[in-house]
Length: 143
Length: 383
Image 1 (cartoon, one colour):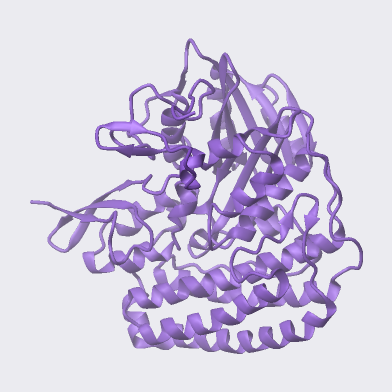
Image 2 (image 1 turned 45 degrees about the horizontal axis):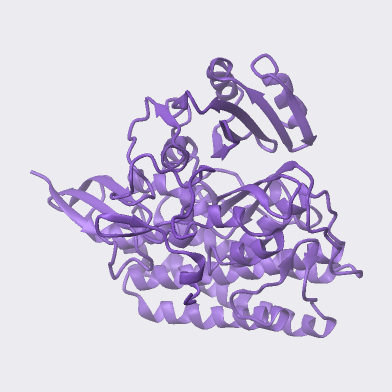
């Protein structure tokens, strides 16, 4: 699917869609609508999740899912307030997300609900609880 | 009763440290747990704290083997971010460098795989021919390995006309040798006994777990970023996407060796079509708020960069998703049901690059207490 076809497919489930080129588009959604969007993507033949990115935006954490819709890449953003940093797992629909969600949990402190194996992935076992290296407030102690 | 066989962090069959915990029943593997993070260097955070120009050199050092892949992906993402067009000549030179790197990476991998099955003669043959590619890389970029050729807006070094005859001569030799290796790998009894039907990844699993690169192509999945989402000069060059159906270690060997032949074809075409013109355009140090995603087909598969700019000369966030990270989930279906003796070659079969995978956070911990190493300490400075 190219960007236009993807935009048509997802328009009921997203807030705004920005088409950058034939193979790149960005969209914003929220938790409820995102849940309905996933099966729609799967039915349309999207099987590849390239990765999940977490970005600290000050008082919110933005979670971006990069879906490969061949050839278009859909970048789907969901903004989570820092008071309620929870999102449900998508591993039931996209099992390839399993490591990316663990990465998201430890690096940005987003709680992924229903994850089959919520262990640490990269950080050492003795890493302090609650220290999330990609958060803005995480400062280097040695500075 | 089951028994646990720890594998790593330090192990002769692992070229980089990572921990694998195999649960075995007799000789059979029944479960596997992977623990990553032994070579974390905090590169994603570090990328946020350096300027766009400085970051080229940091991205280049994420991986020693596929450094051109990392800088190509980084540079084209930042170029999209700043809306810069790269000159045609630079696009073709990037293509040539990427393919030279693919040849050297696949030969390096084939050598390691031969060594893992105890076939050291073949290992030395592969690495002898890899030297030819490294010499070409040195001729173009001045370095055998870390080429430092890519820069924002183009490339720093030219492929001069006097290089072309040497390159064509070496490519002819490599083509002949690679064809011979394909014959060897499909007929030698030792290789067939160790690789055929071992470590199978089915097509369904490869699609389900979002596996990338030669690992997924060896299972019959038809994906290649060079064709599906063309970058550099790949949309002006014709090449085949190599696919094998079996999904075992042998299929992964054949896919990579046949990809070398395709890479040779790509370089020949690029050398022939190399347009005249400037090598680079100027890039302003500050980039207006924007976001961009760039991906390329690195030797091990899809390499993805996602960047957000904020109007300064430093990025707000850069996400790097190297191919081995995406391929880690494939270990479980490949190992479970196999035997302990298969571990080294099956592990090698995805061409793992742990330095790429482990690069997300700032970590250095001593017993009991977490501590972070400063940049000055890393550089050995004393205050």
